[in-house]
Image (tube, rainbow, N blue to C red):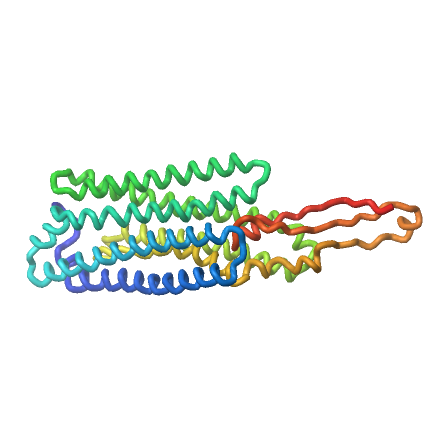
Length: 348
């Protein structure tokens, strides 16, 4: 196989040790953080969360955790084993064991294929949260928004599945190299499309929350304004964390000539697809989002001052009721479902 990179660059001691040390080290760090995060979420959902959708949240978080953890562990195992063979190649100058593992070993093909499929499934679970938020936020155009978002996300994940299958087929020794390259290109495009979708949907949701919160912020001052800004920042942060990890991963995949050795950061993306939504649910369980809503006993009714002239003339005064309805989802969804209702009540 022709290669534009010299043997000493990729299969040097530095190349076969530094790349897995960075990739596996970062993945293990995120893995420990994710395990702690997931444990806290399960604890607070079971102990402190009283919302009607607790079981749905637990199912989402548990499924994401299992899929993300499985794909990341398989990817790290593949990275370590391949690096061990690369180290052997660098010390003995014998490419045969590494080539046998990469080209004709069924275990290598399975370990390349399964993490991609598990990641696509985890991405589907995480993506279900975004259309549901859009469904909660838009009353008048709910079906249109929900169908369009689901269609875009379904097509994106379908592309990822096709890319994973093509990549796995290209690993077989009887397949031409073009199939392998095409599969890798499809997976790269899937990563980019997934990052763009998450980024755009997150900012649409944050913008809608800002729009719906204008009235409460105007009526209740700076403190409520700061709290709503924290909620909006939290929603944006969740999308940026995942999108940034995808951008970094794709950049390292495309910059082999600059680095001088292959750096695989797939494990970070596999873990981040579960960490981002789990982080929001944890903050929700800690009451961070609920703190953005003042005590309903204090704001259930707001009676504006009545001019004396209007009272003497028997004119009706306005009683405006500001009610915050809790949405079906916890976390940022609680805020997203809050709506400001006004009722004009005439007093005799």
